[in-house]
Image (tube, rainbow, N blue to C red; front, side, top):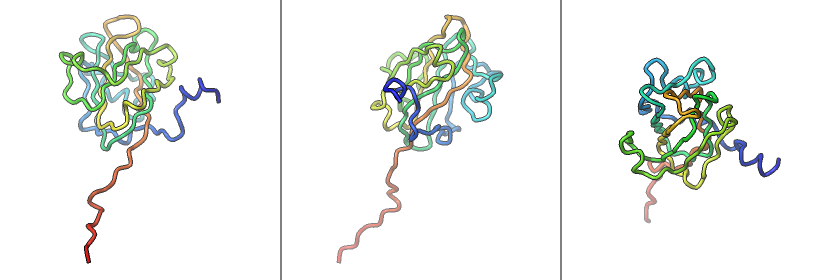
Length: 177
């Protein structure tokens, strides 16, 4: 495997983080009521090319994904059409309650400009050092490929690993003799 291939491939130790999403806290601002986030994020729905997440009032989307445990995020896959698929994607870690009014007040952990290859499923490998202790991820879709009013996302997949944490409840105090 060449160096170029290794930077775009998802490493073997990385898993689809779908099982670690806290679904009760997932939010998406500016989504169409008939084309919601679950179409792009949930297993079974996201594999169906006829289903997608669609923006409503304009091209922007703000997606909040909390996790059930701390994770390390390695790569993100965002699939969409060449015309209405997302273009500029800003990722924020551990930022709660962001809205369109304050999203530009914070520096993103990483920014990706999606290529046609990315929109067909090529992973975007992230700045790994900035995604080490992630409790939540906010994905800001700033614009789309053709500057049209509607952004459509067919699939979002997050790849990484869980952070092994010590279970403090399982530790016993050492008795002094």
